[in-house]
Structure formats: C-alpha cells, structure tokens
Length: 191
Image (tube, rainbow, N blue to C red):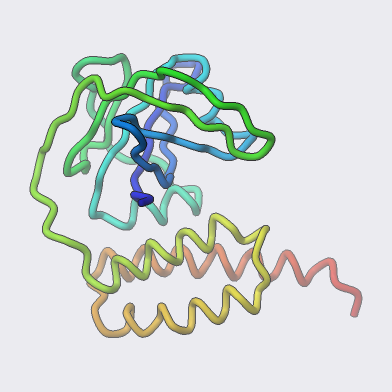
C-alpha cells in the first residue's frame, strides 16, 4: 500500500526541502523511492535522515508541485531537521540501507521517533481529487494530455460537489500548472 505524504529533508545549506511522495512499509521499515535526480534523493544520501509528514491540508501537496514551497516548519525532536507545522503526525527516520536503481532508488528507513499532533478525520472527496490531480501534475512529462484531461474530467465532479476553500485553492494551482504545461507543449508544435 502506498501512502501519500510530504517528505522534509535538509539541504546542504541547512534549509529544508519539502516534497510530496508516496511511501510504503515493508518488513517493519519505511521505503522511500524518489526519482533520479532529485533534491530528496541527494539529501537522504548525504544526511541519512528524512522526515515524513502526514497532512490533510492538500494545498501543501499542490503547492509543492506548483512552486509554492514556503510552508511553516518546526524543528524535529530526535534527528536534525524540520517537520511541517501543519503535520497531523510526523515520523523521523534514519536510513538503514539503500537499493540503487536507474530511475527510482529505494531508501529503507527505520523509525527513530513518531508524534501525533492532531487527529486525522479523513479526506473528503475533493481532498482526494486534489491528491489525484497532484499525482497527475507530477507526471505531466510521462502522460498524454488526453489521459490527463480524461482523469481531470472525472476528478472535477468531486471538486464541484465537496470542495472547501483550501481544496479550491489547491485545485486552482494545479489547473494553472497543467494549463502552463499544455501551452508550453503546443508552443513547439508546427502550425
């Protein structure tokens, strides 16, 4: 099972890198598999630590994919780094082993510390739709525009029926990113 979370890692200059990511658990460890190249990959390799943030504010997922990465942070408790202030819970992890791959290497991490800050009350349909659209945005370079448009047509139903202000903001950011990508893609097509 893949869990959609936000990863925070420490950059070389001490700043915090924030990235949405799918993680999984395997044999008591948490597996993180970022694409090559990525800041997340480099930071985990350099520091041997990573923080996973479980959140329900979908603006953070959408924001990270649309250039909005300035979210309030707070220091972690057992490892050097930061977590999202908005995290409902966070887990501080230490790298145990690494499995290289040309596309997506895997980091096998052990839990060092975990804290719950607020209860998770579940996602509504619009929040789930934003998460799915965020995943589409992260794969714009891999999917056809027809596939993206087909998926968005269905996801829009949930936005129209159940979105609150945060979901509408996040959805808007993602739609701007998709439209920008569409315009860039068609700019190079001969007329």
